[in-house]
Length: 61
Image (cartoon, rainbow, N blue to C red; front, top):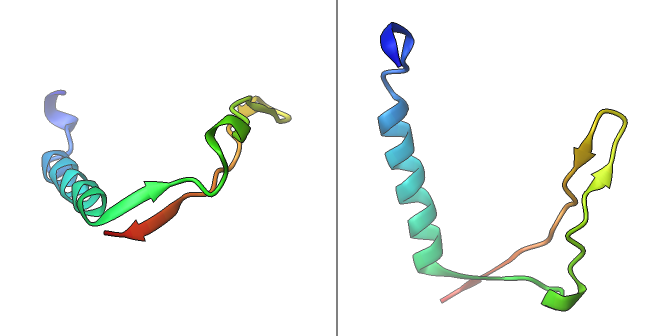
């Protein structure tokens, strides 16, 4: 807020919204692993907790 606000922030938010909605309209997103087998626990690192990596499949509709 104030004088130091980024003038392009609103445009960037709109572009990201359009980008992700286009992906979700044109692709089905799924996981190659069964939902019960996905490990949601955080991994410990030297400085904090790091989220684990996940694999995602994008299938054309």
